[in-house]
Image (tube, rainbow, N blue to C red; front, side, top):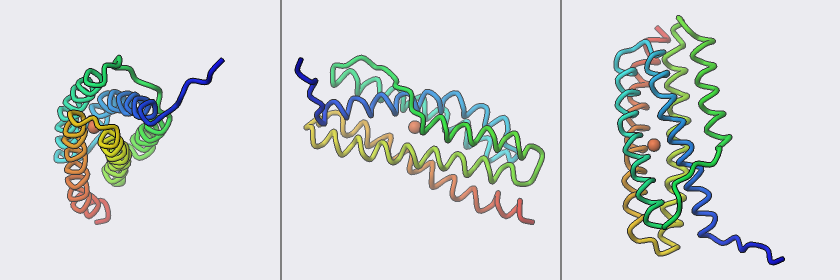
Length: 164
Ligand SMILES: [Fe+2]
């Protein structure tokens, strides 16, 4: 029996399923992180990013449609691990000054994971000639980067408070 050919388009679809799963897990995690956050600005940032994340899922739905494949998630152990660490910080540092810096760090780890995934997917989409897919991935990539910048700025004030 011939081995199924595993080319870049297969890898692209696989990675798309990975980030689709990740976005859905993030959708579920963000309200919990918002609830745990002490600083109002941090809570708002988490809630705002949840709205954005909904848009990211919708864009991925469009990408699946454009490549004519079913929109499916594939368990991503990396994002599960990052989210689990965030949950653990939320529990271990509850009612302490270190809680918000810890939640922020966890959220930035999530963003960096997403930035890495979307950057790769965008490049592959270009190589595969998926010209309509590239701008969709680029739009989300830019939003993830913006969120990461916002979290970096928030970290300056939140960490200062924690260290005071
Ligand atoms: Fe996202």
